Image 1 (tube, rainbow, N blue to C red):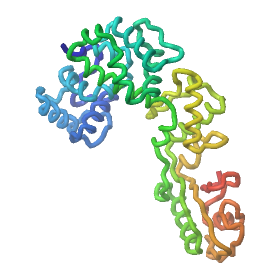
Image 2: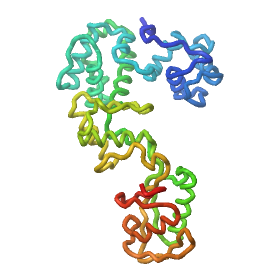
Image 3: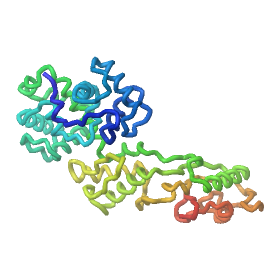
Length: 359
């Protein structure tokens, strides 16, 4: 027996195709170390060549056309996890789970993960059941697959036959993906903030470089903590803080292209706790960060600048300025004036923050 590839309704891909399914196919090939240079959603000669190599290595007709034959092979090798907007219900249909098997699965998820409230065992694996699946993986992690396999009835195992083990592998991969779409502290590793002055926009970059040189020449210790913050990171920081402050409900957070996060957990308490965990991980503190800050525009730098005793520093006009205590740039207004002479302005209420205009 085989899985039902037709229920996925995947489009035929070939030279000239474009869009999210092409991107998914390119991503699959690239991760499998086929010669894909860019995941750009454009099916050109490079993607055609990589596709033919894939087909040849897998005993398929090497025609460069991605249809159900190629999809069938790729789906069992990890492509299933790349399919855009794949619902759990469609996936289970692909795996040949009927109503009886879905009811068995819902019952087992309740049992294994002790879901509270429990899923309704109705054979409809919709949005609530999908959230329950993500919650189950969050609670049981890598143990979930084995526990489900043990809990599922012999009737379900006999229905799937020799495909059962592979079906569980595919379903577990999907469950893991849903779990890590959920908001939480693990998102802090995505879209990292740069600490490189080279990532600032010109001419602000050159102004910072000149000020930094003057600081170091004067004997200051300079540690850069942030320059460019990707807009995606700002989005995550902003809305996790607002959810944590209960200024917005998780279900009303607007989506952002390129950030496949699910703010809504199985329970509202879970959503709030995840937002709190993100706030702590990001170190957001009080107010939500701006969605259009100078950091996003590459026009700000956060750094810690300290020195011992008194320093003599050259300002942007070539004059030597004596700077004493406090020996910290976050507090020393004399040094703020030196920064201004270079075109680097201090934001007074944000200790490490300097920018093109003080905001």
